[in-house]
Picture: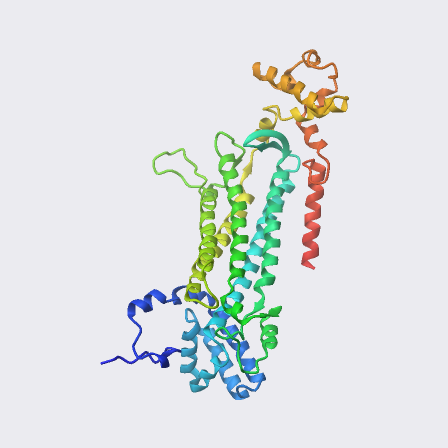
Length: 457
């Protein structure tokens, strides 16, 4: 005897057999789609009001359906898509069946995802701003604190600590700009595309777009239901956020080590060892560094899903949500933890200054000094290189060489070279826009805070 198909399937009329339980489990999206229920209900209400406005359903039916959806929204915890419609049927009766007029699960899901991602972009952008504020707060305190700047993880030239913090500020600002740009492509209404071909009903898509805060309606129904470029774009931006957080995490791991000793992370952000009593492990920046891979993986997963899909909708697209949700959770969690880590770490200014005074960090300034005395830079570079070799041979610094020893390398050296060898003078000389001079760094902080004030208006 052939079993009857489940009555609660929207597509049940075509099928004569129940869905195999294994298929039900394999294709189920409820466990993670619950996140979209608020957006699903908001989209349904907007769609319903448009149907009423266009005369496709009666005013009475419109108000009944909207009231039922609002009641469900108040009690809802995990029900979404067709589950909402089933609950609506329980609440208001047969009128609920009219909600699905001129709508497919394909354009409905696309709508839910855009509404959800739009909200999440705003939250991530807000968390980025909080992270930036933590960086700027530390920059205010450290505009005169000198540290070694690095290339190739080798000490290179002195910079101020604030300049280093503001480098991460600029990275985060690019991240915010990417999110803002991405949001413009997220904020396009797909509803009205139907399953793939649009609708023969006289819908007012513009009304739905306006009621839901969309900037425009989609222009191709095939693309509307199969497009996930906006998710890829967000995941790409999210991956870059994690790159930046991971780079800072790496530096905090290095800087908090005994070998560097530049910072001490808050004790509440560290853990100990189960066997070594002395350990104070930088777990937070390590985990941020490690979690970057989750977001990279989410981006690669979605690109892989999309690369072979013919138009239009395919069930493969159900797999877009889990990577997206995990990426969003990861980025938000890392931003939430890194801001207080930056705020709470102790900076060892004396250790940083000591490190900046070692390793010949003002060698470039000495070469520039010789250029100002009239030597070609390549010749100046060669002379200072010889001075470094001599100082290193004696386990000394450039400042330990006498003027006589320096003049043996070039008669252009005079007593005023001593000022050039000073790290404070070195950083102060980098006074072009974007340079590490304390005065320029403080100007940049003022500029940033003024930008924030303008945004707040």
